[in-house]
Amino acid sequence: MRFTRFTFFFIAVLSLTGCVSAIQTKNVRNYTLMGMQAQAVGNWDLARRAYARAVVNAELAKLPPAVRSVLTYEYGRALGVTCFFELSESELNLAYKLDKEAGNPLYLSLVELARLSLDQNKYHEAVGYFAKAIVEFDKEDFAANAPIGYADVLAEYAASLSAIDKKSEASSIMHKAAEIRAANPQGRSITDRTPYGKFCTA
Image (cartoon, rainbow, N blue to C red):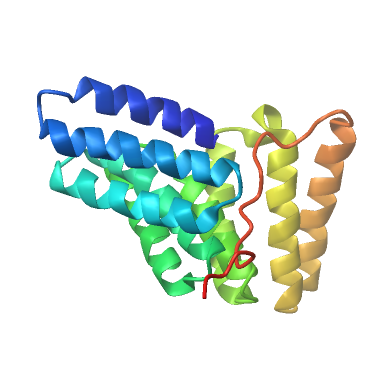
């Protein structure tokens, strides 16, 4: 899902050349590539700093919400991985708002907000975000189109519910996740989970 976002991002940015500041647009592309490459090798601190610069240049270039949402989303993730949790939540919420403004799918930012909360043991917040994400997943028929990823999210939703003593609801959702996995024995998730809080910077 993230690679699809970046594919769209680069097509959109390239199409804007000549319409906005050429220097700033070039900076956006270069810093985004730097962030992607750093992220791919696990250098989340460099990724965070690169995405931060990409976001600033995108704002200065007045790029459209559909483009800025991608950068803000990746910046938010990188902030969370490096333990800037409050800033991470703020940026991911901004990515959600930009996606909404652009008419993009909303589940990406919602899932990341849910997982960011879950990994901080903020279970009530996680439940709220997971509930919204599931609604968006169901609009896209994720149970059929990305069953294992959907089951993974359901399992984390169930764990969050269980942590706030909503055992019955958690059991029902976990059962649904198990059914999906049983129906897709050869399936696998097509994206990696963001390792929130695993690469804190000094």
